[in-house]
Each structure stands twice: as C-alpha cells, then as structure tokens.
Image 1 (spheres, rainbow, N blue to C red):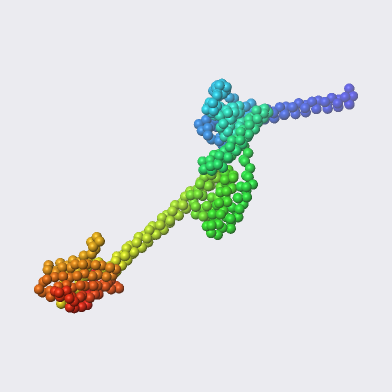
Image 2: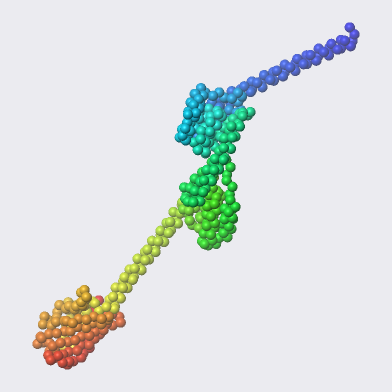
Length: 448
C-alpha cells in the first residue's frame, strides 16, 4: 500500500467521523428545540384554557376575547371544538334553515353567538351569526360578527362568502341610511338624529360630509373664534346647527357646537350636543362624560345665581309694590276729604268737638254712592244733610230748631288744603226766614 492510499483512507475516515458528529449535534439541537416548542405550546394551551374559563363567565369582555383569538391562531393544530359547541352549532344550523321571520333569524344569530362563547376561535359560528343578523335586518350585529370572523379565521381559509356578505351589508346599510336621512330631514327630532348616528356608526365606511355642511361648519368656526358678545355666539351656534342638519352624524361638529354653547352659557344645550358626540366617539366616552358632569355643575351654579337674582328682583318688586301702596294710601289721605276731622275754628259754637275732644270728631266717609258725615256729639235737634263731595271739595248743611242754636240753617263749604291735612272753608248762616245773616271762616283739621 503506497503512502497516497494510506493518506486518502485517513482523510475519508476523518470526514466520516466529522459528518457523524455534526449530524449528532444537529439532532440534539432539533430535539432541544422540539422540547422547547412543545413546552411553549403546552403553556399556551394551558393559558388558553384558563382564559376561556374566564371568558365564558364574562362573555362581554372584548379584550379577553381578542386575546383568546390571538392565542388560538398561534397554535397548530387549532384548539379543539368541544362536543357541546358542535352540537349547538348543528342545532343553530338546522333552525336557520327553517327560519322565516326576522325574529326567527335574530334568535338563530344569538344561538351562533352562544356557540362562539363556548369556542371563541370557531370562525364559522361568527360568519353564520353575521348572516342571520343580516336576514333579521340587524346590521350592527352582522357587522360586529363579521369583524370577529376575520379576526378568528385561520390563514389559507376561503373567505369569499364572508366578503360577499360584507359587500351586501354595505349596500343595505347605505340604503337604510339614506332612507333614515330623508326622514330626519322631514322631521329632525332628537330621536331621529340619534338613529342616524347609530346607523352611521354601524356602517363599515362612514358617510362623506356634504359640501353644504362643511360651508356652514367653516362659517361657524369663524364666528365662534371671533365672538365677543352673545350675538356672535348665537351666529356660530346657528351655523353649527345648520351643518348638523345636513350631516347629523358629524362628531366634530357636535363637539365644537358644545364648546360654543358653553361659552354662551347654554349648558343644557351643550350637554345635549355632547351626548350625541359621545355616541359617535365612544373612545372619548370617559373624557366626554366628565365634561358633561362639569357642565351640569356650571348649569346648577348658573341656575342658583339666576334664582338668587330672580328672588332679589321679586323682593324689589314687592318693596316697590309696598311703597306704591303706602304712597297710594298717603295720597288717598292727602287728596281725599274722607277721614276723621275736628273743628279748629268756627264762630258761635255751632260746630262741636276740637283737638282735645276726639270723641266728638266728624267722620266723613263714602257709603256706596252717597257721602255722609257723622258726629256723636251733635245735639239731636241738629242735623247734617245735603252732603256733597267733589274733588278736594266738601259741602253740607247744618239745620236745627234748638233755642240754643240761633240760626235755622248753616251752609258749610270746604276746600282741601294742598297737604291734605286741613279743610278751609266758609259758613253762611241763615235766620228763621232763611235770610243770610252771616259769613264766617271755618277750619277743620285731619285727626292723625
């Protein structure tokens, strides 16, 4: 054997040993990786089982459902579907075949949704629920389940029927939206407005804002930014409302409108605008709700201040009424002869009483259409008659046959003083033949 042959044999033996060693190392590495992958998959399945139990106790937990879908799609093969879920799926499928009314289809959709609670990764349950909701004209439910279907479906699955269903929903919802918009334009109530918003939110693609609405919006922004007085705010509010009549689903316009309404002190209106905004932008619900609470507090404060001012106005009004009433009473006392009087000066003592003899005062008062004068001290043989009252004027006659009364008749005529406190007049006396025999000044003073 020559040297070259020996060397070649040694080389072949060396390479063979090296190849064997490399293969053994790769096998060991692959085995280690397989063990790690198996352990990771086991941990994932355990985590999925734990999350599934939690989700079935709270199926409205959107975050937990999304996590379960992600975990299930990371597993190969996919998690098994329980026998209960398969049986319920078969029942829902059979009932869907016999459904005839919208209520029937809605019931079927809820059955498929229950299957999806038992196995959230069961993509077919979602697409069938979406189809049933579409036949029940419950487009929001259909759209929601389609989104879940595309989140759950595994790569490589034929989604053509789901895509067709989505396009059909787009067409139906667009038609429904246009009908609702026409009804809103004919009768723009708050309920109709909220219905438009809900339809727009359920649509896959939000409706375009019309150019007319944008024109009103831009003018409203300009008016609002330059506002210095309440009239300016009202112009901005009017333009925002015009924009929202044309595009009642426009969230930003509601938010801007609420801001201007707040600056104008119209807190209740601002709250109403924010409620619509909140329906359009649920992701801002917490911030929006806190702003609503703030506006309620501002509204209450403003209402309290307004009530206080109103109370002050009412008090002032009552005081003014009291003052006018007192003034009227004073004027009545000042400018009327009605009242209680005592004689200050009169000759021959044919009048009685005086300042120090108040029980003998003369009482002048109106009794219906007649005026009368009474005095408890006048002798019974004397009588007061022919009482006449004109503005600021009083006249009457005093008659009697009393021997102590030397006159047959006294005619008295008084004029009320400017301050209403005295009656200044004349007394003309007549003898028994009714001839005038005297003319004397007479004064009466009002008893205070």
